[in-house]
Image (cartoon, rainbow, N blue to C red):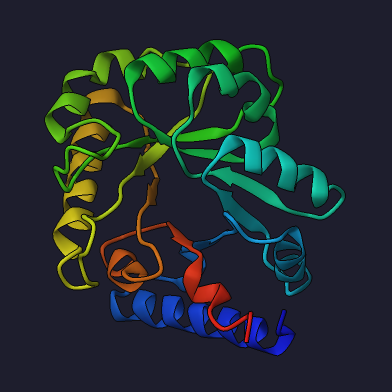
Length: 231
């Protein structure tokens, strides 16, 4: 692994986040970089931690379990950013700071029941399919509004915000409508539930600057951090 390349990549991504925040009149400190370490060696995640990164995202529970063990003792906050099956929730929940992709009321209720047994349950974001792609998990924007009462009734698990992914193949510019729509859905759901929903998890390596400009508080960046490490 090329240490200097990783260090430069981190600096570049953070500079791009800060510039996008400033363009939209936001404080860069309001945006958390979640370094997506899926399918990377634990040593790469360890190197990121040595560079001061603290928030790490994994797509798959089994890989998250393994990385949590490999990086035990480091001051790292883990995020599950991919689909979570109910049968993996009990083991996963105590390990993470946040679950980003809660994609149904059924799963939210499962997590709510489990959270009642934990002293410090993680926050969760509700996944909304703002791109309308059939292959994506998550609520349709209209469906999440219809489930507002059931969402608000889940009091043991902290519902802290919403999450989305732009359509496959979109650019930073063409992704903007998906991000704007998530913010609008959040504002509507906030009014319906009384929840603060302060977190907006949106934006990946190819479009995170547009997401920051649209109000993202969490950006999930992987390939932009690890580009060139094998050179």
